[in-house]
Amino acid sequence: MFNEHVQSRAEQQAATRQKVLAAAERLFRAQGFKATTIRQIAAEANVSTGTVMAAGEKDALLVSLYDNWITAVHNSRQTELAPAKTTATTEDVLKLFAPFVGHFAVDSELSREYLAILVRGNHESVIFRDLALALLGELEAVLARSALPRSQVGRGARTIYLAYLGLLMTAASGAIAMPEAADQLRQTIEFVITHPRGSQ
Figure 1 (tube, helix red, strand yellow):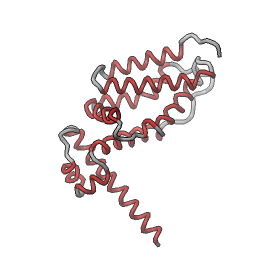
Figure 2 (spheres, helix red, strand yellow):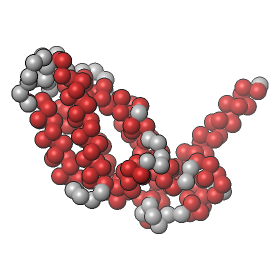
Figure 3 (cartoon, one colour):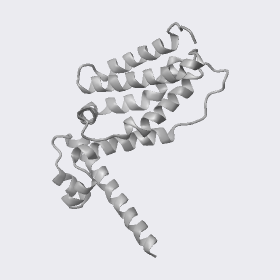
Figure 4 (tube, helix red, strand yellow):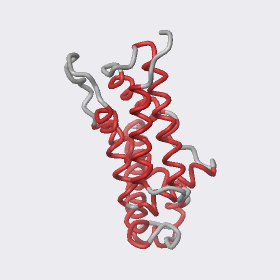
């Protein structure tokens, strides 16, 4: 009986949090991150401002929205690899990043806000922990089918992953546009896959 009550309460809290996040996302996209207030999010979600703050202040809510979306992308990935006879190309590696680059480009202003929050370092994101491991694993699986020597697959995956993060942060600063960042990511992938190998 006690466990059922605790579980029910936890489920209610999770449902309320999702309601708050959905309201925040609607407002962030409709009127912009900076123009949105906690009071407006509370009104949109039909909850108190205290309930919104329990879910997180604005920066934390935005990080949660992006983390949830990125997690959903990884969870929906097909884990089956292409047949071993198929050699992976730059395009195969780029496909891993396509949902992210596309999403960041759809609402570049909101994406810049998210990345700026990460750069400030005040909010932890699973993009640097669990999701980093997931993407690195996906990269290694694809690079294992490329011309890259087996001994260099791990290093190649880390190089591409760090280039991806760096390019996202550079795009967030406004120094380059997202299409340019995507093109530079393509060049990095090509370099990693085709660069002359030393000793293995």
